[in-house]
Length: 126
Image: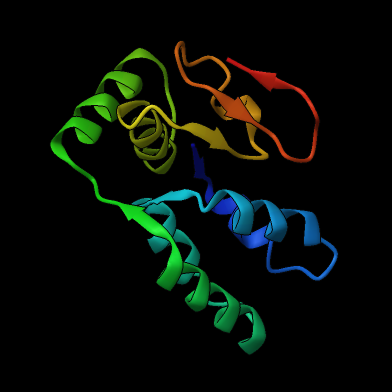
């Protein structure tokens, strides 16, 4: 089971990333509440992109920021400097035992016990 990061959702709006849209459709991934805000809050989408994203989030399983997710994010930020958004996304993936699908592998590869996958590459790290 997968937690899809904001950057992958945004890439999927581009016509040349059919493979990402197929992955999303096949896997029916989970999404962090953080990605919901990050993606839909972005102000530079065209109308077709915004429409695609609204449909995506109507069908996505958005996971809330529970106390367990918040506690995990705190631990991660105490251990190493990282953005608030990344810590909450990683905390969500860890809490729900989901593989994080992201293009920003470098931001997360140091986190022990977090499975990550870059769909732009074929290798997976655990």
